[in-house]
Length: 82
Image: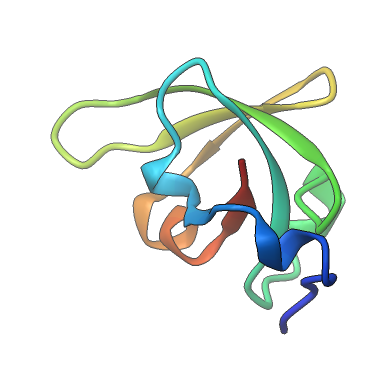
């Protein structure tokens, strides 16, 4: 599913796994997964990359007041605009 608007297409769109620690981005695309939407991971939401666990562990993000740990394979499929 692609949810890019014409404004977002002019911005840098990257995979969530490429977002540096401490940086914010706006979600532009999320894979089909029934668990992501209820967690607040949906297009248009701002998130903060809080860090990465070592040795391929989960990516930690904050969406609103919720802290979420995402597996790297799922995080790679989520795109964000800088």
